[in-house]
Figure 1 (cartoon, rainbow, N blue to C red):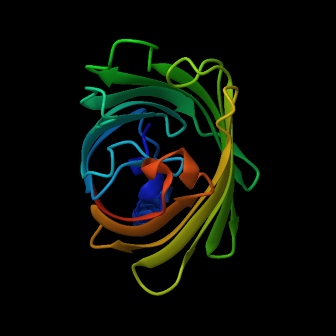
Figure 2 (cartoon, rainbow, N blue to C red):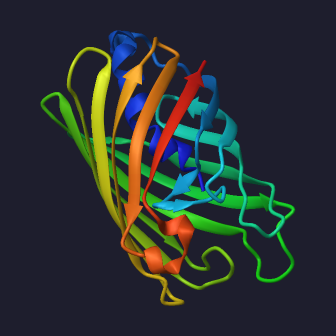
Length: 232
C-alpha cells in the first residue's frame, strides 16, 4: 500500500514546483525516474503497515508522452504474521481536463512471505483529480477494490486533500479520508504535515496521522511520521 506516496505527497509537490520552469520543454515520449525513501513508519490510509517500525522503500516510474505512467514500488511491511515486504505494480494516465489534472489508475498490491490463510494481495482502481487554487492545490480521490486485503470483500476509500506553500521550500498539506470495507471495518482517517524541499531531488516530510478506530488495535493509533525521499 504505497503510503510513501501519500506521506510524502507534499514533498513531491514541492519538487514538482521547483521544476516548473521546464514545463515548456518538448514532452519526451519516454521518461524514466527512480526513487528511494525512508520513514519512521509506513502508514496507509491512517494505518501502520510496518507494525510501527521504520520503513525503507524504492521505486521506478516511467512516464509515457507526459500523460501515461507505469511503475513499480517495494517497501518493508510487517503485519506480525511473517510478511516481509510489499510490492506495488501500477499503470494509469493523468490527462488534463481544463484546470483539473485527472489520475486514472490500476494498482496491484502484492506481498512477500505473506502468511498462510486469506490471500493478502488485492487490486485497486483509482480515480483522482487536483485543481489549482492560486498557489494552493485541492484534490479528491476514490479507491475501490472488489476484494480487499485479506479477502475482506469490497472496499472503497474516499479522500479530500489539499496543499499550500507557506515560505520558500516549505509546504503544508493534509487529507481527510474514509475507508469502507464489507467486513464492517469502516473508519475515518486524517493527516496533516509540512514538507521541505532540501534540493531539486530530495524532500523531507513530517506528518501526523490518526483515525477514529483506536479500538481496532495499536496500528490505528495516532502517530507522527518523519520521512525522506530522493527522486532522480
